[in-house]
Image (cartoon, rainbow, N blue to C red; front, side, top):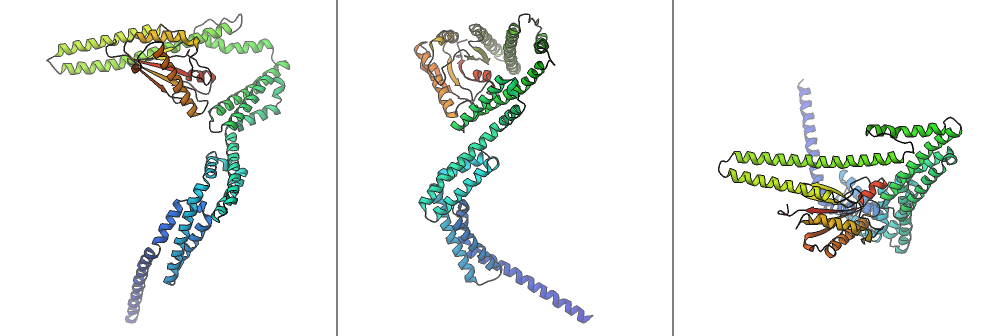
Length: 491
């Protein structure tokens, strides 16, 4: 028993000694690493920041090999000089890689931008074959540049750039046009062109227009996307129409039954609007009556919404002022009189708004009110495509605008130019500003309004009031808004 106990004590001592030795060795290794790897770690971080793994793979790879060899030698307790030598070589290769990567970033800037654009368009997923070809050319350009073959690198640079741009365009088309192509293929297989050639032809033309727009300006996708959606609609519509025409030709459906079926939705809509569905001479008159009814309801809803918002604000103001007045005894009469005076001024603004609202027809301008600010949305003020000159046929409308401004003497005026989303962002911004400037200049020259009362601002496509996916919505977004802010005493 004594011998056994002595053996255990010896074993515990050996374990403790070994543990301390290992711990001391780990501390020593950490100290050695901090000494020998300092420059290598700094150089490695700089190379990684310069994207050297991509742009200088040869030097960066050699640096990583020496770095790992140094780590292995240190962990296995090899000769200190070997560790020092490997770490120094790693730092040198990393420095070389950083310089080469910085040179490549400048020399290959164009191809790298094309590569990023293609990646953003999901080219690796949607155009994998072209993407891989571009990647190989790009890799060749990098390797040749690192070896000092500038001419060869430039040749591969040009080839890779072209391939990346091709891959980007294919990917963009796949995103926006693939569904349309599938629908048209389905339509061709179903021989839709035999029964609905006009609608199917329209869908194919819209697809061609979308593809042309992408070829000419792939970065302005608003118009191509809209054209593709219209093409999708027309393709689906053609498939639907072809089935109807086929049924009529096969005498499964008579022409009279077809017309009556198409009249039923309008009859239901007329009933909801409490309008007699008179279609004895066709649906045109009823359709116009329904459009007028909906437009009048929209205007009424807008007016009620404005009045509700104003009433809420006015009530809150009154409650706050009356609460404050009730807390004080002195001066209450004078303050109540001031409050009454302010409410009377607000009532005069409402009367002036109503006066302005009656000046315009619904196809000339829409008149809005936000607090005491009046907005004239000049839906009847149109410009030639891409132009900013005011046409003579708009002069009558602008005369009415002048009379509306005169209702609010000394008011501040802001002319806002807006466009739809079709066209480049910069172009739309510039065009909207030019149109706003044109209206401002007209007000200065023809209306004799002092320039200090006027501000012209172009917002481009950034403030739509309707969907840009429909022709009517885009028409509403192409507009000039005149903002009238009455002076404090103009009421």
